[in-house]
Length: 193
Image 1 (cartoon, rainbow, N blue to C red):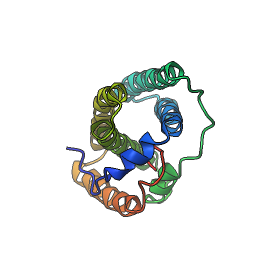
Image 2: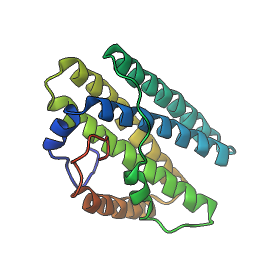
Image 3: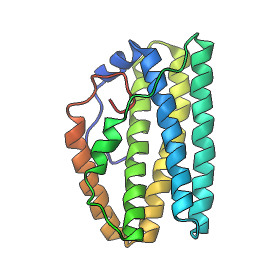
Image 4: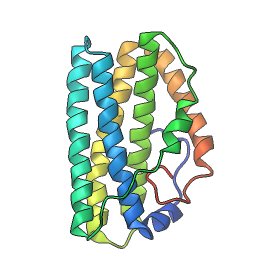
């Protein structure tokens, strides 16, 4: 369904489970960044009414997810830690060459966002299926569905703004690039670590 070219090993779930404070902090900030990205798309492409409406919904939902993660942390006696820079997002951005073409820049942003959501969804699935804490497992199963919906929304809009064959070629190349990068991951308690 997600089309990812590399599957996360279940050993990552143990790494994450062993440092819940860090994985939850990283997750909370990832939700904030996702909301911020949706707002940025609204600001930069405000003339695209359908896109603005969809990004508004995503921004609100991502901030709701942030609150859910933060509330979960508080319920477990944790404090939101400091954000650690996301080398995953920085690395996958390198796949695309910078462009001054507005449409091309939008396609790139939408594909990158789709990939981040797809990988989050996949990681949430792995985590929920491989941890002993049933409350946390259910929490991540519930969030997994939203991430999948966001993934399809971003990919659908990319295909709306450019010929599908062109977009799919870019998407497949990005998936291959990300798979190579992910082969050395899974050792940090981070959503994309």
